[in-house]
Length: 469
Image (tube, rainbow, N blue to C red; front, side, top):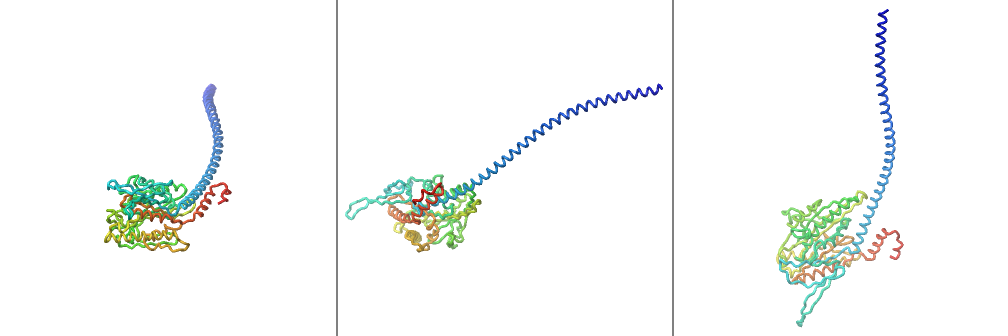
């Protein structure tokens, strides 16, 4: 009995200890539950906040998506508008060039060269509101011994005084560079007697500075700059250059192997699309301005030169730099093909004043013949009737320039003259030839004016104001 009681006491004691342990466990569990419940409430609260934020984010995304779509549509419209305006700009630019004249003549008088002691100069007067007139004066003795002053007046599109630098001259021709990019054939050439500054104008001196760089490197640099700007409206351009000379009515490649000079026959071909090609000519891809400098250096070394009484290092050939410009607009699919011809003509002095004999005499005769043919072509253009014959084939020079001297091509002559009194006769001949060129008119002014009105009308809100034209 007593033993049984003892067992029950021990069992009760064990249950009490177990009960105490369970109470402690329950308290801990309750405490943990309370903590978990608090954490759960916090998480629920955060989830609710995240849900609200998510809804706000979704609304913002929808708003941003709508804004993006509207912005993309506006950008597309602006891009189309930019393309349209760029096309109108090209059209208006060409009309302006046609109004100025598709064949223009500039006169440039070189300065005196102090290192050659050039003291006796021709009396010249420069005037005109548009800097377009020049007057030469000369003392003439009559048969009776009386001395009288005779004046000769000339007017061109622009006259540059001896103080004009290369940049000032280039600014006047830069718009024609744009025409070449727009797909027109452009020809810019320097005419005048030996020593009048033709090569200096076109190529610059041997070691040019930023001020003295010639028209050729300036033109190529401008083309690079414009091509970069036009990328924003989808245009991509490629450029290829050729450099040749016409010497004694024979074409030579100035970029070829010097040892092959005169051994390769180069023929001129014109296709029905107005493209000109010369067979077996080296072509340089001009993808950087530095390549132009190297090309000019090589061409200068290869160019045929000889000596005359007028100039110790006279260029005795016509040099022609031909730059082909191919453009493609990825936005519109439009393509353009233009050619920029920059030509340094040989000295135009008369045989009587050149003092040439032997080979130099034959060179001078070939030069004067080709320049005379150029004058004949220009005269034919002045008096041309529809379907009339233009004698392009009479010389290599005029045949080469065929696609740059007619139609909607753009041509500019730089007539370079010397200020020296001893060159007065040659200067007079050069200015008279340039006057003949300046009379060429390829478009009737009335047609140009009406074309101008049509293009301007595209920019106007109403065309009622044009009914009088």
